[in-house]
Amino acid sequence: MAAPLRVLVTGAAGQIAYSLLYSIGKGDVFGPEQTLELVLLDIPQMMTVLGGVVMELQDCSLPLVQKITETCDVKEAFTDVDYAVLVGAMPRREGMERSDLLKANVKIFESQGKAIDQFAKKTVKVLVVGNPANTNCLVCMKCAPSIPQENFSCMTRLDQNRAQAQIANRLSVACNAVKKVTIWGNHSSTQFPDAAHAVVDIDGQQLKAPEAVKDDDWLNGEFIKTVQVRGASIIKARKLSSAMSAAKAICDHLKDWHFGTSEGSWVSMGVYSDNNQYGIPQGLMYSMPVDIGKDGRWTVVQGLSISDFAREKMDLTAKELLDEKEVAFKFIQQ
Ligand code: NAX
Image (cartoon, rainbow, N blue to C red):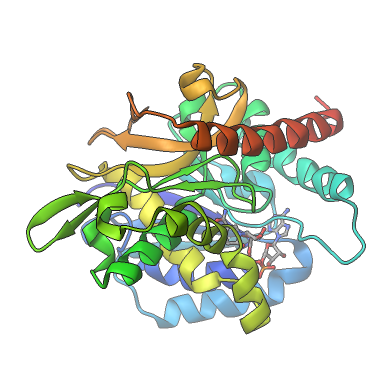
């Protein structure tokens, strides 16, 4: 058996972590052979709740989990981690201005970025889930200059899964028959779920999604809107956020980042835009389609045609990220 992987989850007393920790612990992400040391970070006020989560994890009796550390100490949490899954963030409270929300999150992700820089393994992979995920991830990366930029990503996999499921439902096929749906931009209601290059396996044949769906009005209208506001629709119905599907998406994201993407498919994740690809402004954490090799290195999928319709939507979500970055960077201390 390989040496245990040290996996940190922040926001460990929260809703998403409650589903996530069990899935990671039972081997859904790093496989059935990989032993684990789980490190759970939350804020001091949540330590009693976190203690309950730890008791439950122990009671799950998971053979892969060799050690569980619960802490509210950032240094202890980040020391020597191989993976850092940053789920904990400051939620938007009623009446809170957007800049106040960004300010509170910059404080969290600046301190966690610095801790990653100082204490984590230099090979650590950091996935940011806590919202605003793209900008939080950018702040974190900027505060950890000793870690390669490509080791930071933020999650738009839930949006990708939602988009795949919408198309699969529409065509009455299994979700994994739909491939190459792309999420561009911010994990927010300006994101652009793009099915133009998606393909669908139907009865042993592979069709382009627009040909299979045969309804461009739906693909360019209701489909996009449904995915963009899906999180809000779930909160409205459930009175709680989409924790189960978020935990599943985190597992999907991490698994592909660890083992590589499968042949004939790609995935979307928020990555640092430093190459002027697809006309995306430099210096943002922007969701793009990526291929991931068996060595865990990702590359942006090349050569996709971008229609005028797509261009407009991609620019709109870039504009939102540029605005968020401008506000957030004012609050970085450094
Ligand atoms: P919860 O409010 O249930 O849990 C958040 C936990 O984070 C709490 O236990 C809180 O004490 C902890 N926390 C706050 N500040 C912390 C800090 N500085 N260090 C460590 N822990 C800290 O929220 P939950 O439903 O679990 O959602 C967590 C985050 O995921 C939210 O920001 C949410 O908006 C975001 N989401 C992001 C998604 C994405 O696709 N990127 C999808 C799902 C989810 O909405």
